[in-house]
Length: 350
Image (cartoon, rainbow, N blue to C red; front, side, top):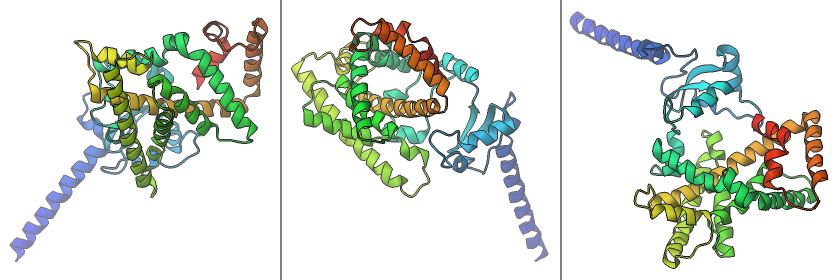
């Protein structure tokens, strides 16, 4: 009896030692690191600090997760988010260097949950030369040359009309208004020959496909939102697939982004096939509206708290109008590029 009791105690002791070792290695990753990791905490086993990371906060506030750790550890700290060991930087110089060294010292990646929702085979999430090629293609649409050649004047007109119409209605949600504006404006730039009802349907799918679910993954309503997002993704992809089929059959040119991608797909060394092309069009339509609408809302909020900055913006824009011969003309590339020094400083500060 005493022998079995001793064996049981020994087994329990071994289990306790192993668990203690695992917990120690979990909370002290420096033990297995050749270098020295930044300070920080790994949180609870497995889930890490995920719950605190997703703790709700006002859209335009710095989340308490970052505020608390910046005060305790500085601008560079380690954590564990959604099961991934993570080093977080809030220093602008470090972030700039990370982007500058992309595909060299640093490799682009996204959380698994993002990849599952957008599609694991989506070229948008690929790294190395593939990602560089995709960036080059998309810059033809939304980069400086695309703005210069095609978009800036019509975008200026659409923005003025949309916000003026919203302002006449009284108070409105700026983020939602800008998101709708971008989806409505960008969709025909992606695929220009859709029937009006088909285009409206695709715009609705882009608008329904948002990232709000990602901000609160533990909320009870999240799974309902994810279902709507996945449904919007499936139906949007079907519409894009049908448009692609018609375009390939007709061989017509419409001067839109679909033309650009089809020309690239027909090259011998092309990275695109039909599936990746459809996925890329979907991601551009979704990501552009969410990131820009949030940045716009943040900028307006900050301007409301900094009247001196707002006054200088008005002065700079007023000077541009004074120089114009045609006061009703739309914004030109030259004005945007060479006469908006302060405007660009404000834009890059957000």
